[in-house]
Image (cartoon, rainbow, N blue to C red; front, side):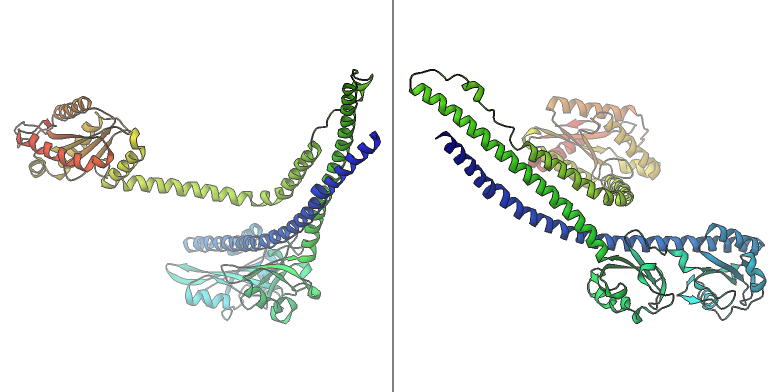
Length: 549
């Protein structure tokens, strides 16, 4: 009978393995592989859009740098008489995409050129009919051309950048740089991407080798151009038949500052192959994990069967009144560590997934650092603006908005707050002081009053607020009546000891009067302010330079 019991346990564990682990794992694995495949394609789509934006931005920056160099040279020519041939040759060495450079006079005659091999052909050439001369001459603005073939110094494929130059405010000519489109981007594309650059008339300025497009070829006359309408309706992304032979690709478009269109093209076959390989790697890892789990369950079933057999032998021995049979302990089999191989496989899978994203994170790291830096600068600026908005600019005390912020902070403390002392302070005979000694002295007197108040309160814990011209309010949380009265006396004494002359005061010097009240909850502050105001007027009627509670 014992062998029959072991076979029954084994079959039950196999059935449980198939129903509870193998079939769900295969279904989940298939769904996970499919989801991963779709996610990879979505990431390629999004990365194509980002790549188009980045490449267009890089091109804009390159042209901005070139125009800046041309403007610097034009500015130097406005101040000094330059050897134009030498200056242009130096600029060409610093900017390799430049094929030729020329400088013209105000009538369109070439007066300087680079490289040296072009000087003899260029000097004296009349270019007044060229757009790169006419546009800056008429408008005073920089000019960036569309694609064209040179007809002056050479017959090369060109795009042109020109800037005006002046002397004593009068137009004196242009500086023009002719660029080789093939130098703007590598013919092999950018990694997994092909690139196409079209001018404002949708003619090809440059295309990487995999696109099979020629310079100045109209995009509308090619399979690539036929797909542009679908690209517009798909918000500059999607899988479109833009490759030679109608092969599909992910395409994203970005506009440059000069109106050119830059397309990043990721061939779908290449992208799908990479995504499929990564999905298959994931499925292989999943199958390996399922196989390991199956072995663990089978081994566990056998161990459990051996343990059950051992327990059955012990029970039979006890039922017969005999002790354990010899060798019974040797037959005992320990239970295995549960599912540890599967957990190890999941950890390994997590490591592979992290590695799969590492390349993308690295490519975006510099952009993220820049965003973090700009965000930190913005937060610091916002904090400074908030501080300025809550502060009286004359005295440095809080204004009414600052007081409201302080009261909201007190309200947030709730029952932990306790009492809040309110001191209303008024500088005695301040109007008379202002009239006699002038507004500048009055401003100094207000700053002195705030300094005397701050000397007696806790920085950061208490609030000093300028509520009116010469009126101030002090909020002191968490103190009793005796403490606040001592603070009021100290403020009076500190103000008096500053010995600021005031001939129109009965005391001969600048003084202040204080009204004191207590609030035992934040919602009692307004009533406490009213009581402190009444106490302030009593202090003034008693001769000023005093306080009342």
